[in-house]
Image (cartoon, rainbow, N blue to C red; front, side, top):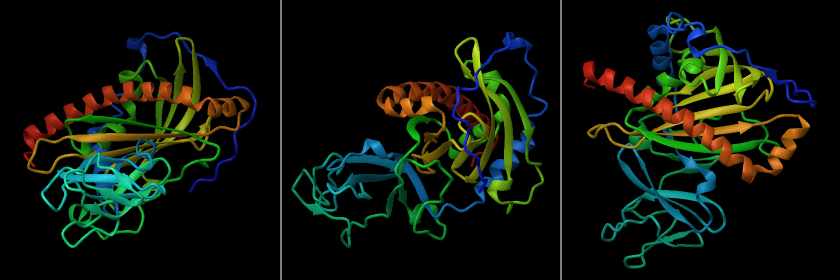
Length: 339
């Protein structure tokens, strides 16, 4: 894990943007080599997950509530006990197949609203629950029959800022593609300033992994290093350096390693919604965990209910574009690769 020095506490290091037409920026197509991107996706696909899948934002499931989720064609019900613990099981009641989503929660038990059957965290011989984890930002479920790997007690961990001093927001967007198409989008940092000019500028990829890296290369040394300006309106920008890594086949992490917000991370998780016998559909769950030592950031945290919607709108706009990118990659790939 990289050791970060705390950022300065003065004013935000904003610079005036250079006036440059979109067409006048330097092309990046020669640097964005398909073999490099594809090899990075293949290496990520070889890394273990412990059979854990992201179900969405932790904040969307309040105590005493239940909800439906789908993973790789599997219907699930996830509920939060009144004490706060999260549980998950098959989405159909073992009695007559009633949908359990939306059913009332009494203590730690989920109650079927057709006939009042109680289903607890221990499950029954005919209705087996699945391990769950709430990491404070995201909800996870472990599905061993789908993942097919050696299970682990907890999901793979990534470095995050201290949640007591960070501002966390989560955005979800669905699209007609597979997780590997989403990874291919995120492991192509060269498209940022061309495809998202409203958000990024002056982008330069200063380091990228060679295509012939061994498949067992550790994720933290298999990275893309990007110098970029985050745009603040038409005239201002904040320069940072960010590292992109893929710790698993469904996750890409962007971490700011220098500049404003050093140590902040953006975790992008892709969860398949349908099984292999159905047209592909996946959901992106993106967690932004931002931190800063500047005085103004404490105010932003205090105003979190007002700040989070703005962050979500920006993330949703980016991902509407990027889902279109991933869907196009999926379409082109499946035309020649029927798998």
